[in-house]
Length: 466
Image (cartoon, rainbow, N blue to C red; front, side, top):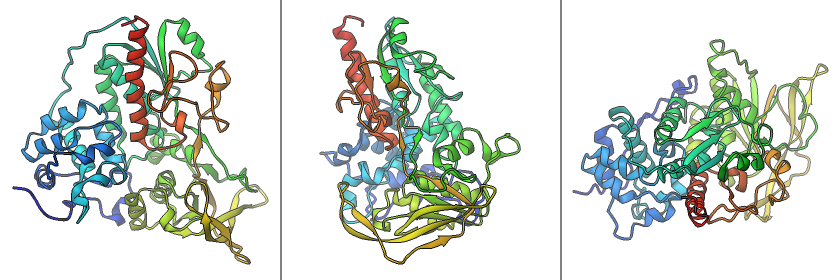
């Protein structure tokens, strides 16, 4: 019997006044009964419109039907056919702008909670089953994957599933890329990320850490080591700055540094982990994306009294997920919208002691389609802060570009690659994820890794290596 409620089954969460003081996961997930009840809202449309919004082509109605019938293991197996990181996707993918956007139930109510159900299936499987050994025909053909973020992990997992000898080269001491250093524990528990990575190792994926490609090996040297194809999924870890006075003061962080200290280096467990991070009393986070929300919510949890999101457009233009904005407001984050910093003020000994801002109003749309912010006259004011976190985006690290001949890149640093295949200007070398697009979503990076894996397989077969 279908569940015709216009609303999603409410998912349990920590109360805001409790969770903004800890790093435990905000959302507690569905129980078995909740998951079945929500799955029964799916109409099992013959045209499957939701699948059109999934970059990794999960068979959405199929796995939901099995959840509705209480067949949770089968649901997980269906997801895992095309998505090898379901517990991660179920938590951090912007389903509202992808699969759920096309859900028929969303026309007269809320769409089916596809992301919540994907998370449920993955969590249930991890808690109740052990990974099954897959019967894979192995080849001796070696493929190198640069970076162990979502693009690299997906590409490596798919290629290993095809039988290739895959090695990931990761610059950090821990694999996971942005999943480990960028997304906070309260949104994506790190032990869960490592479990997903262990599942890939079971497929035969090898991971070499502390390997900065462009320093330890060049791409040419990897080819000389016998790697017949290479996928570059090195992400976008180079922080962007505004270029305003005062950005070099003590107490100014890039969001990249701030979140890496907290997440990968466990500063939130200080002094158990010897990674201090200075938060201060009042914190300003410049930017309006998911990274800005992560930084602001983390600062609040570390003890800041007031945390501001400073964004030069209105709430309508905020690029962050609605869920993240909602959670941030619940947790006491203060939004200073239509506000633009012009200068960070400092003390004589070089520490932040305020941020000069101006008020903005919106004019005609710019190239991005969003209305251009214009400064209001006589609106200058000072925001009382002692820490500033700049979260206005990241660019790809230029190291691989600077050490590789004939690799075509954009002026801003991204690698030029075919959208459908990830093929670069060098035969046998592919790229995807943030290294190509600049900072984007986890699921889009995974989609590019999946496309590249298919293209690499076809390329190697044409070369006679399979």
